[in-house]
Every structure is written in C-alpha cells, then in structure tokens.
Amino acid sequence: GAVVSQHPSWVICKSGTSVKIECRSLDFQATTMFWYRQFPKQSLMLMATSNEGSKATYEQGVEKDKFLINHASLTLSTLTVTSAHPEDSSFYICSAVIPGRFTDTQYFGPGTRLTVL
Amino acid sequence: AQKVTQAQTEISVVEKEDVTLDCVYETRDTTYYLFWYKQPPSGELVFLIRRNSFDEQNEISGRYSWNFQKSTSSFNFTITASQVVDSAVYFCALSSNDYKLSFGAGTTVTVRA
Image 1 (cartoon, chains in turn brown, blue):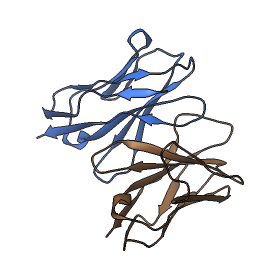
Image 2: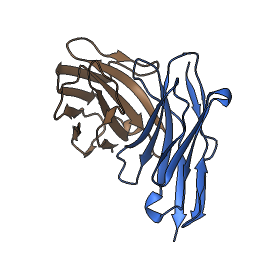
Image 3: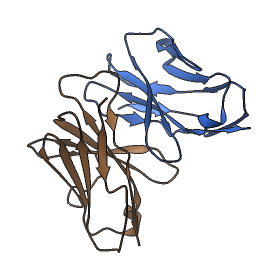
C-alpha cells in the first residue's frame, strides 16, 4: 500500500537554530500534503496545506515565516522550523493525498519528534 | 467550522471487557467524511475506518464496530472483548472534500490484563 516516510524521526536542537523535516510519498505522487502538529497529550492540529508547485496555505494562527513549507516535487514536502524555541517542541506529522482519489484513507507519515533545548 | 468532540478523556477496562468510545461532530457540509484513528505509544497514526456522510450503514471489522447516526451527529466506536494491545489513544476525525482533518481531543484507552 501507499507509504509516507518522514525524516528525521526525532531531532534535538538548540534554541535559535532551524530544523528541516522531510515528508516523502514513497510509492505514489502527491500533489497535496498536509502538516499537523501534536503537543504532548493533545490532539493533532492542522498547520498547513502543502501544494506541489505553489505556495503553502496556512491555518489561522500558524506563522508562515516561522514554519516554512516547500513542496518542490510530487513526492517531497519539507517543513522548516526557523529559529526554533522550546515552545516549538512537538510531534510533527505529515500526510499525503493521492490526487483525484480519496479512498479509504489519507496516508500519514510516522511523525517527527522535535525537542528544542 | 467543523468540530469533533470526544467527551471521554480516559477509559480503563479489564481485558475482555467491551469498550465504547463516543464521538460527536458538527459540520455545515452536506458531504463529509468521518474517521477513526488509533495512535499507539510509538506515535504513528493507524487508520481504522472512514465513513461517508451518505452511508449510514454500521460496520463491523473483527472486534471493532462502528455506529454512525446522522440524526444525533454521532460516530461511536466499540471494541469488543478488549485486549492489552488495544491500549492506545483513539482519535475521531472529520473532513470535507478538501481532505483537511479536524481531530477530536482523543480518548486514551487502557486495557489491563
């Protein structure tokens, strides 16, 4: 079946540094990917929609200059957390949609756990 | 705006007991999709089911069953004869045709041996 991967699976960084997280669709092309964030013991919240070849659209309250999203190809979307701070520590999960078809599921990646010291 | 409410924060049962997770949703869309996901401690979301708004048929898959009632905007999930491996956080979610998922707060299920 469809598989979505994320890299890295976990990352620890110092406050003020930038961190890039990759989301790849391994066996299908995805024109649309989504980025979700999950704080400890909380639910998943949609951050942004990543569209191949165009600018990402961000949900209300999400700083687009802080969370840079690039969807340069049909199989890769990247989320860069710029100037990360401890409050950005969270579990980031991407998902991918097969274009033109919405079948049984939206395919989720395994998540990336970010810890900012 | 879409909203999903999972009123139960935590449920603890003994193995072999049945457990029902409640989910109530709000949407103005006439076409929408409801989901249940399982999130074990590893964090990876496991898809369990999708139900379309125009399909109110209940579904059973092994020990899992779902009850969809549009009249009460509910999409409840029952685990029959629970097992320790069922321990996880379960999320109910809702989307429209834009694929964007609105998740409920989640219910933590603990099954004790």
